[in-house]
Image 1: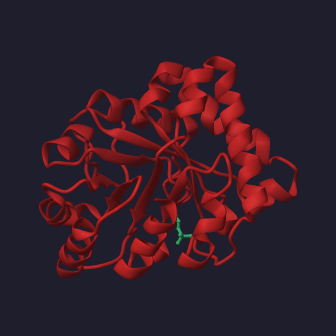
Image 2: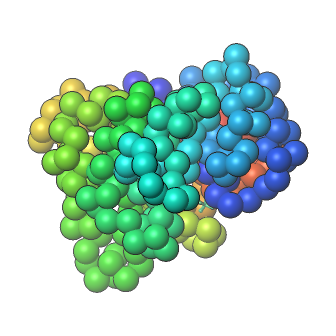
Length: 248
Ligand code: PGA
């Protein structure tokens, strides 16, 4: 049995006081068999790290630079995240791919940067509605996954969490059905199994896209869904904690 994983991606929401209060409420909660991580906006990482210090809740960046250091205005390196107490980082969220033109190759380098700095990368993959309707879902998610396997090697997946987030389900209220999500999770796992069956069997593949307290349990009950990456419902402690309870 894989231990489930739940991440709360706050995106560009909140304030300093909200970050302390929300991270504090999550840090104080008692969880079952589930790993929990929070991804606040960069300016509030310190508040969240302070609130979660001494708890089992991990804190991480919503993005990480593909560069180690240098003249990259606006970027935040993996070493900086690690330095302030982060232990995880998202890489390749669809909003980064879409609005910041992150390519598969860039995402692979971000994953490598995270790993090199002892951060657990959460590799996000997922197809758009147009790609799904055009029958290209498998091609797209396997291409996104394959770029990271090619750059980092299969052994790196020992330390990676994969998040399947269909773009058409993010923030839209339109969740993938448990069967639709399960199909993609099984596809991703079987692709990894071609390279290493043991790693494929132990890696956490989590689902993201309009997960709410009301649909979480059914999604997490699928055999290849090992938790979730939560956006909107991560902004309220009660909703987020009830999703964590559905996983644990
Ligand atoms: P959502 O976002 O839960 O608001 O759909 C998920 C995500 O983008 O990680």
